[in-house]
Length: 489
Image (tube, rainbow, N blue to C red):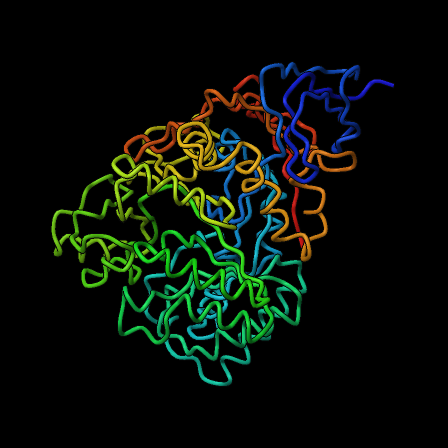
């Protein structure tokens, strides 16, 4: 019997099974049915000769959960994009909305500690992330100390959300650095009891802020050991900045002692978050590795480089949830630093993609393709995986092709597979696994998005299949294709 689809004659790289050779891949419905040295017949044929066939990439850290953002990620080889660092609340509302609207790639959510904390302390309503996962981070009210009763209420809400299928607990601790360390330990203890990870944006390091309540890296690793929780260290590169060696050594030490700490990194030198957050206060620009001058900040809604402290304060007051870039280092001038981030031991690749920013006075239809010029985002949400393959494999060789693919697919799946059994079928090219696949040209795959042209899609990704359905064919997005499915605990 013929298969529904056969990907013929490609170089199949499956890090889980150690396969790296020319094979045919047969697909029936939404699953891989056969991997053969040849001879498979299909109702539809994809010629992959001279191309690499890999498991679809899994992004554990994507705040860009809309259709447009998902399309750009699909063009970068992503087949599953999860919102785990910030999370949402309630998760049921986010899952319902994504299912009703449709998504080009698979989706899933952690429960948001920050949103529930804001709800408990200020009485703010819960939107399920409809307002954007990074909104309200500049508000001081939600960062106030929690009373014992409020902390108990927060833990009850977190536990209830885990019962709704949340993939873990997302903790934006770096945005509320004065939080009582005991509260974070309580949250980790709850996660350990539930058997889910804690996806943490750590507090600043003592080198960055000597007044911080506790060093962010020491806290995260200590709590992992004390509670037994699986701690996932979000974007370890951007929160550690120039102190990455010290932080990485600490992570490796506690791993050797038996703690479960996983990490992620992205190959860019500029961060992006809400301009009203502490990170953009004129006195704290150095925390994320900036020189400490407002000129390191670019306000995304207008594209302006902030000229002065007064202008920065004005923007923080007028649009505290507005996204802005903050430059830590120039990646074009520091290729060795980018390569080192790509090769960080044990780190998976994750983009930290952000939602689209719409220039003032414009309205954006999320189904419009391609995104118009008045839509902006961070280029990491568009080109992280193309850049990783270009820099780490082709240009510097710090990773083999198989290693790079594993960091983009298999290893992210393993972070979640104890929590979400469906992830055991992803990140692999084996019979019975999900037909989430990417076919790319290893000699020309690359990112093209820049800080000026932020929505230019990656090139070299020739075919992308999600649950057996093509989302990208011959390098062209299929606009009608919305085959993404939920991933739940």
